[in-house]
Amino acid sequence: MQDRRTGNGDPAQIQADIDAIDRVLVNVLGFQEDIEAVTKEFKREAIFKRGELFRMICDLLREADRPLTTREIAEILADRKGLVLHTGKRTKEFITRVRHSLKRVPNVAVRRNGEGVQVWEFTF
Image 1 (cartoon, helix red, strand yellow):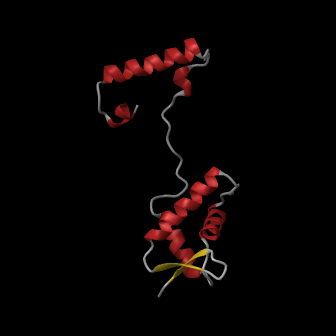
Image 2 (cartoon, rainbow, N blue to C red):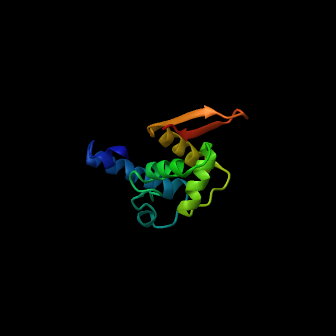
Image 3 (tube, rainbow, N blue to C red):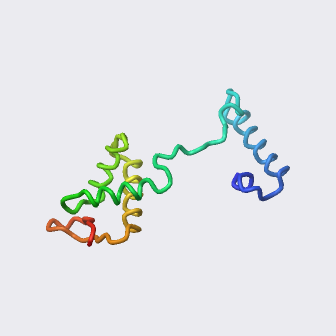
């Protein structure tokens, strides 16, 4: 499938592979819906525009009156963006994404607070 998206590989072979998958869906698994209608091109819906998360993190750290944990930063950003964070995989992925963006922000120090929790703050 990656070959089809990138334009590499023999188009006839790629189409034959897709047809084989379709046959397995219908003949083996008993799929009865319209395969073409279900298998539209998937496009990820971006939560943040390019560079928006980075800018929001910088603004938040400038406004903060105390060092913040990654989770606190993620919760504030989600609230500002109108997102609801439920416990689970997606929230962990979002927090990890925020942490990776924090590592790229210049003049930001990470340290442990009195409770041993990792906190982030600007160093001017």
